[in-house]
Image 1 (cartoon, rainbow, N blue to C red):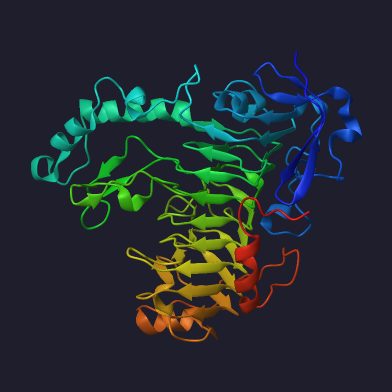
Image 2 (image 1 turned 90 degrees about the vertical axis):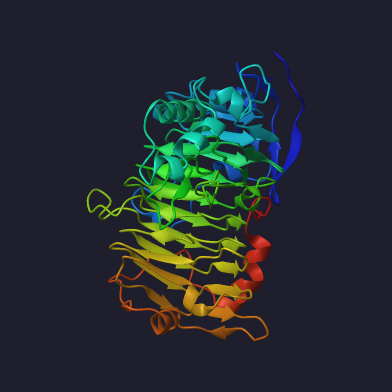
Length: 456
């Protein structure tokens, strides 16, 4: 057993004081049982925080409390992949079923490619013996294979390689969990998977580069085919009451623009930043920073009418989308409330901000769009098979002009056919406060959004 004296740690701008600790079986610090009310010197600290009343869809039903009811033996400080898995229940294969309330503080850098011996693995370590990228490129070149999906032993080896990586870098989170980053905390090369994991809170983390070692070639995806990846930074599936707050999402030093071109298409090693799919619902994403990513947020994974109908209810407020290219968000089926977000959109490859998908009901209010050269107001909405978007109070700033109110729907309809309608059939009521004017959020959100910016 080892112990350490009480140490002060800044969690954002909230002072969190960790008590005398003892070593857990996984080697991480666990607050001693006698700590009790001495655990935090500033009252209810970020780890014990719950989603405020009415703060978006995640406040519906029982609300979102995460691991706030955790006993002293279920408050952990983790510094490695092994410690994170141990704090989540001990076995990554079954942790998704661990509903014990738990609070997990992340300290330093936790790398999903960390092996059992502490050595950092690479893609070659995870590849099936029968797989190599060179062989894959030679076998499935459209000039040789044609425009049909890859099949056969080499594709089967790629699928086995993906399964190897899933076991390594997909970290399964169970219900009734709070994960909070201490100052400078970073999760890199991993996916936080919330699958059938209701009542979860994730805050104050720098989430970086959930790269896919084995992307799939999809020759019929689009006119020229595309490479598709599997791993998100956070994936929410079949879960309810999830709060994702004050995190930063990026590709770090491995941006999409630096990936090679294969078969004439970018070799895409990243999927979404924060995806909500597979009947998940009641999610609030607030004060997050999405930086320099291509695919950001997919809400609804399929156009098939079925279990997603009546689900996928998500609130996005006070988030910063900075240099991002698409899916901000892209919505299918869900009632999605997007208000008081700030968008800084420019750069080669920009696609759209708000994707209006099949049976979607996207309500966009008082958002601020700062547009770079080549991006016009009519580019901000994209029709993915939907019929309507409700929008009001949004502003836009284009190069060389003063900020001004903008009718996103009018701008879209003027440039595209067929027109989208103005009424999605519902009005948001779950908001912790009245939406602020868009010019005000243009000033405040860049200061407040992202990891390291939690208020006291």
